Image (cartoon, rainbow, N blue to C red; front, side):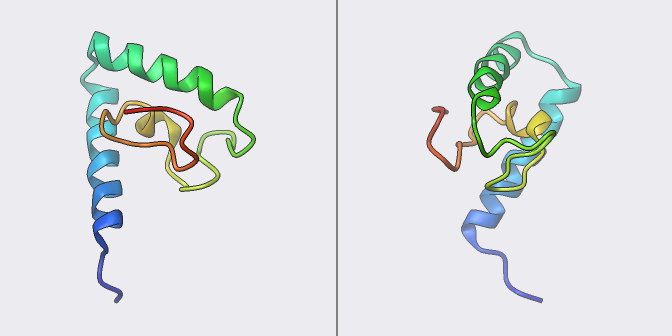
Length: 76
């Protein structure tokens, strides 16, 4: 089994944070998710429910406060 890189660990941490924020809603996080979603809707890499570049589920990625867009389209 291949060793996990720092990038993989960061992505996993962000996804766990994002899923936590899906279930434990916070007004600021939801505002951030809405802003990011507006940007993602215009992105040619967006798949139906995932980011076409990193493969992350958007429901969680948009709510992961420390996550970054792999195409540099939105800030933290």
